[in-house]
Image 1 (cartoon, one colour):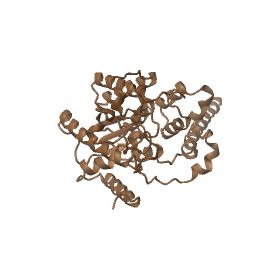
Image 2 (cartoon, rainbow, N blue to C red):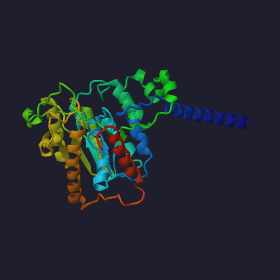
Image 3 (cartoon, rainbow, N blue to C red):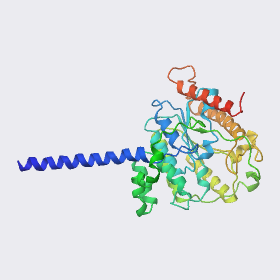
Image 4 (tube, one colour):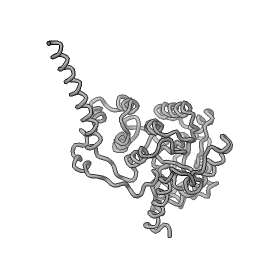
Length: 354
């Protein structure tokens, strides 16, 4: 009889623990503030998770520079390639690694396109990113995983870790707002962020060639660590990896980091499509094709993505004989066509198309 009572107590404790654990997960999901801004990862992750398994040909990962510069709608319209842009604002290589790992749970893309921008800056705060809001935004967009726990344990001060394991505690003042349904952001299409047309006033740039191509500066340890992890992950999954760098206003030291990255990638046999060097081939203008000091406007993005798509087609043909197929006349790909139509409707509303 006593054994039965003890057994019941054990069962009750297990059920209570399971209930408590499940409750924490639900509270984190429902009560945490979700960033509905155009640059957040929330919308991108939700949409990505709704895609049919193994339907993405090209996965784009990185910071807001590829988020505003690589439009998957064009991939679909011109070549019938199913691409998705999983970039977010201030996404550094550690976060890119986590986004990539999460994406590969449901997708087996033929190519991964990785943004190189984040190696440019020093990671002063939290060892990962120099802006706490950006750090929290990337953390909040990612589901919990051992990789996420590793970042928390490695870079978050001990007293603050509880807020990253149970984030609704941090955002308790926003619960009412978090409970409200947030509509899809109309400016995001397959993860692409529609940039502005014009360049802000008082934005002037020095073309990167004038800074010299011989500059070299060491990458930070965290960048080297996660660069190696990204390369290993793609090789393990047998997915070709391509790095890309859209044009940016850079200092000599920042140019040195990009050049250093290029040296590493060359040794690894990984293509680096660096528009800091190739921009002249695209007719890109450092005076007219930026929206602000680092992001492309819609005109600049059009030039870069058109050139890159041609590169990707030629590279795919040379490496695989043409693994990227045209899905426009195949069944099961209505989602990409719908997003394409929504994108152009949005452009017409903003007066960018007739």
